[in-house]
Image (cartoon, rainbow, N blue to C red; front, side, top):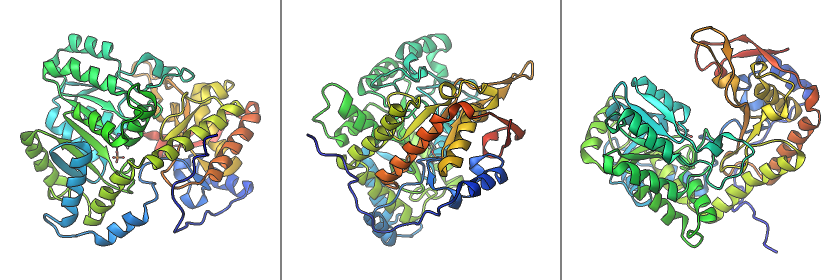
Length: 458
Ligand SMILES: *Cc1c(COP(=O)(O)O)cnc(C)c1O
């Protein structure tokens, strides 16, 4: 029998979790207007709001923090960072930024004109916002399977190559400044993209002179899925698979808050020195000198070390097993989730779980509130509270396409008993699902309303 997969680390520093009672949580939730973004982190037992910037750093990374060279220009930490990024990602030009979205803003400022169209399997929200801010259009082209939560597919993050070809015919290659592929597809359930798909996209667009960029935030998790699922890669190292992914691309954007195993940071890569020069000019304007971007020397060290650690296959085996385990436990209890489990998160299908709550009464947010009340768990609604909007013509409120609750798993932070606790709480809430009621908005900002909205039970 194969041995169980264990956390491939032991704990050196601990951060206590403050236990709360249900009565305390009821008062906390009410004071926060039923919006988990407004609950103090101290009042959360298991925080699954995001996997971004929430990783636990290793002893080696903390040692690197002490070694950080804070020289303004050409610091030792910069060369370590640059050389690590070059060796894993393979691009010649490396531009450090304070987060992924700063890399996006610089890239689209240089490449996009108003009226352009940027295709992606699914744009992450900051990616979409930065494209739209340039007056260009962000077009999502996921494969059809991606839109059916219960449907299994080994590479549900793939970009639909036929629809991409049709889009190029429709708008013309000259209006498409780049094609992006997000690995793994975060907004589409953390689902991986196959090498065959990246290759097919490259073969379609390269003859037309359209560059291919990877949104590389979870590149190591994606490479791990390729090793597990794509024929011919079982014996290839994750590092070599990542190199093969990036060799097909002309550049990438990266948030080091994900697979950089760091708490802040990002970068932008290209092989084109002219493009890099324009990008560096913008970098100096808002981020900083090209050898530190928006980062301290100690951050550059932590990221350089994190990028090596994230490729450790024992770590990736544990990471994938821990997410899959939560997905399997929920499925056993009857909780409907996006199948199969993705790399960094489990997405509960609140529409399927709470059919008695109409989409405009926010079933996803109601479920988030219940998970907090039940067990102090903080997830995030990805549904009508986040994406609902008013019909521009009639003013009628429109629901989102899906009502999901994302439980994102921070890297190296929680143990298996924490995950068991989450699974048990979800099962308890599922058992009394018929009694759960919806929520109504009592305050909503005109945009990005989910961050500040206030709600009340119906
Ligand atoms: C987090 C994320 C970004 C943006 O990165 P930040 O560091 O949060 O600015 C872009 N794309 C994807 C897929 C992400 O998950």
